[in-house]
Length: 388
Image (cartoon, rainbow, N blue to C red; front, side, top):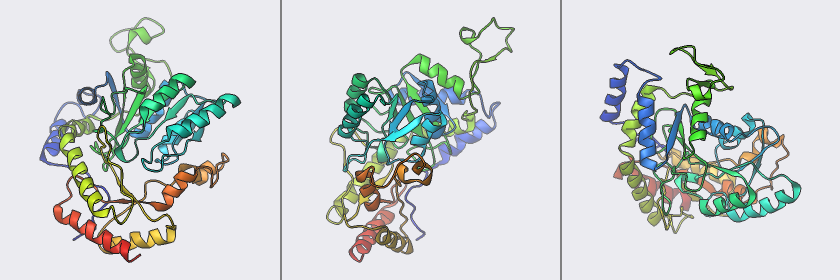
């Protein structure tokens, strides 16, 4: 048996056919498939608008810009995420700060957020935007964060890169029930894939229009957004500085096909997680299964012994790999990265995130896992952890 990776895309004959049909069509990019994909996402999650882009990083960037994030603004997010969740603010010239996580959900903790907001108000350093992460595919306490946003006047961008297909109590993630914009990722190991790709959902028409401009060089063909009358049907204006963050029709065609299978994919992920939890709960701290709603379970993250060290965890990961089981670590706390140290962040700033990093390990989880592979992961992990 070859090594089982921590994540893997699932591409079937329908996906291949959808891409091939688009290859044979008149449009490889800037054609009808992108708006079709956007409409399908909005219909699935329950948002008014979707703007598809080339990556979730691009989506985070234009989401910040659409909310007018700029120099001297503060953007807060979680230390436990991929670096793009913080970098997007730096791209805009803003300053970044972090809010420590909840020890069990791994998401930004609303209690610590409130404490930090109270202090920031006194120091006149309130954030313009807060970016809570849907870590591993499970929603943070967005209702509590939303209430704080009304009290302290910040906007909310949900980084739901892990979480298309997840549900909260009353809505799907992406409906923007408690946020201004939600961001998704379509990287190959995510819930659905377009190869590389991402999207922003929103219920605000002005935000959607601006993000559409920003993804395509800041250019508009809408007369209402121009500074003078159109010269003819060919006419366009660049009204602000934008980027080439467009998604191609080839990618959109794959996304449309993938989205049709999302319910089965998420159900299978949850099924595997339930089996893992039953097998592992006496060996490690297993992930929480939401009591309300549904996790998309992009990742299966266990927490090892509290005395775990990087040396011991590295030994465990190597043992697993030697026995055909891949593993990974999601994520190294952003504030400990060399780039972010220059802003004054240091070890000890976010102790729960740092404890999480010492203890966390991601095990294989993807919908196409066979029963043989699942059993092999279970047996290998239990044996390896007992011998550590």
